[in-house]
Length: 64
Image (tube, rainbow, N blue to C red; front, side, top):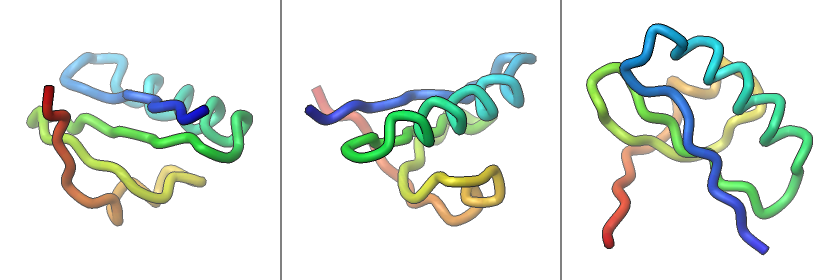
């Protein structure tokens, strides 16, 4: 099973969301796809094992 973890966004709780997603993705292990929404509503995905990995994520989009 593949699991997408969507986190971040323009909320004042952005940083809490990032940390929660980090713990969840690390706990789930394989087949987890982290999807970060930054403060400008841009979506990114990629390696996410520590907070500094956010800078290296690549742009992505959900297409219905």
